[in-house]
Length: 110
Length: 355
Ligand code: SF4
Ligand code: SF4
Image (cartoon, rainbow over all chains, first blue to last red):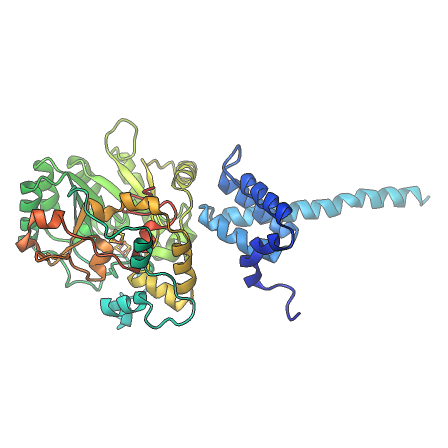
């Protein structure tokens, strides 16, 4: 395999039903439901998806939700703020383990 | 601060797309061997639709000239400061006024270019208002700030109860200026504040200012209602600006937007997106069914896009001097592959979504 990530593969996402149809169909039905306008607007959901895409570092999702955010009318500032939210949570999630490290150090030192 | 021109018009820069024949050639797909899409005619045939027919003659749309203080990168008119020649004459406007009154058109939609730059613009608006016709003006906002002589436009619009329709692709400067030119956002905001100050967009004033949103790239607009809510929230929050409705409009592959698509290699992907989003329920609401579009030199077209591709009316009467109401009412509308822009998703017209 020449490339692990091929942007053209994003268009083939729907084909995952080829190997397991019932589960794939259920997933896409669920996915569609999730992204419908609800208590959160479609734009807010798209911005959350963009933040999560960065947190899970999925290039497909970053492409897809950068486009989707633009389409839903989010602007660059909002999109970058969403990425900062992801970065802050990822950073915070790393740093909070500093407490564990500190506990360990305190337990094991005089 | 004033608007800086981002580039010349296609015509002035000698770009092949300045010629409508070349645009039609691109749209005809004659040179495409790989990845061609279904022709619009075929698509209609597959739905047993023989032709798009006129429903009524309601809106008289005039493209009064191609002169504009901006050179937006998506402009389907290829308008700009260098388009000085194409400007409607007084005689042509007089003839338009006569037709509007004689055939009881309910609405006049004046577009351009920046229509306010035509020397007879104010006279024409006043005459239409006197005749009791609703006047819509496609005002690009920045013209109000462009020169002292335009600063009183908000008062003029108010005095004539003009329905103002203005483009603003984003509530932030970065996106707006990238599409419409440096400084456009700042001047647009200043102009919107002036319009608000005389009553436009204010509750119970009866003075309407609608905004037009179009995507700043090769993608379809999102849901109109949702975009409207976000624009209302952001413009209020950031600038204390109010407006009535937001129209979400799709960019059609014509003129400078076609140039953008070809230059960036996005043409086929975009066409496939439009074709894939074809929505048959848009066909009843197409603007060509109730609008006629007049060019600066008095020729008649089904819409502003057909005008830019020089696809004149079918039938004998092609010029307002030969206006024939019955023939125009019973004519077939000329469609081509650019029409996919009007039928994609929720559809698109000068008034936004149609389905
Ligand atoms: S889109 Fe409107 S404002 Fe922009 S160049 Fe064209 S006519 Fe002028
Ligand atoms: S571009 Fe749109 S409005 Fe014009 S003829 Fe085609 S479908 Fe009708």
